[in-house]
Length: 388
Image (cartoon, rainbow, N blue to C red; front, side, top):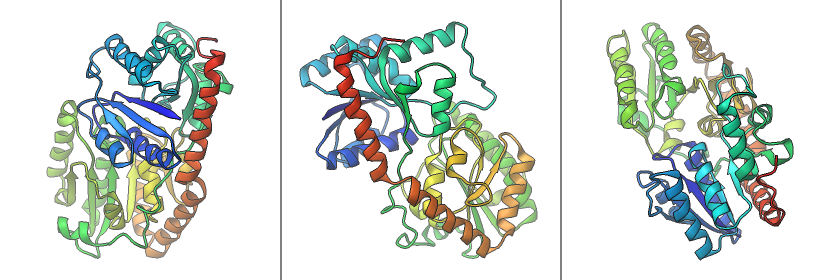
């Protein structure tokens, strides 16, 4: 199979790491994977390292129609079997390009991280527009959780037979607590070996919940001199004021000198090897890769129990689930885990690793996506996209 993946994101987040993982898996199975990506994103480097090909369209993703025309010409010229969109930003681009090139539609990795306060609505212009382009362009869609699939169906964007849940996979050779060295990240940051470390791994953004994580951890730091907090992730220019606000809040608080605001890092296994707890207080979420990776490294997780997260983080088994935007609940959950002692955290860590090994393997993910793509290729002749 010859697959063209379209990704319009200007930065590399969870979807882009998924692209690298699926490229590595499918190229090993003999498929040819190519990526059309935004010029500002490092995802092309990740895909080339995974065995695929990557390039920036001549349009540089400036305009839906212009980019779709450039991609359609490429699809006709290079005879791709299927196009795959990976975010809401590129679904319309890939879908239009496919149909301009004579394809019935695309496969799509669908957004499924709505806020719990955003209830499904089946009326109004916005809903009709989203429903139209999903049904017009998407042959088959995949979500990264069962809850995400139910959201797509509840919003009536696609019928049940055209959307399937496929869990993301974790690279267990990379996230292996038996072989990742410990202590290097603590030493780099001047954190004592016997301190307790809480880690947040996410793009800096309001919807990712770092404001609530900061408030919760500052409550704990004021009472616990042996606790350190690490925030890390990419920060776009428009989100720099938010990150600066977090830094100012830490600087003004007792114990705030033990808050480390870091940039995006490539050594996430080493970071998690030095962590006692991962926190993920997102306000809107699909199913966070960082939670899966933390559990693979035997690190318990405190997270908001929204969308697909409860399918990964099992409350009181592999970590704790809390309501979104609830500083009191988040503080208590983090405090309970930090006070639980090494043995209790180790039990949760062991349970978390067993859970991800059983449910979130890369081979299983690749099997299911390979089957989905092959099914979409077979549907091309039936012209299923465009029918309600």
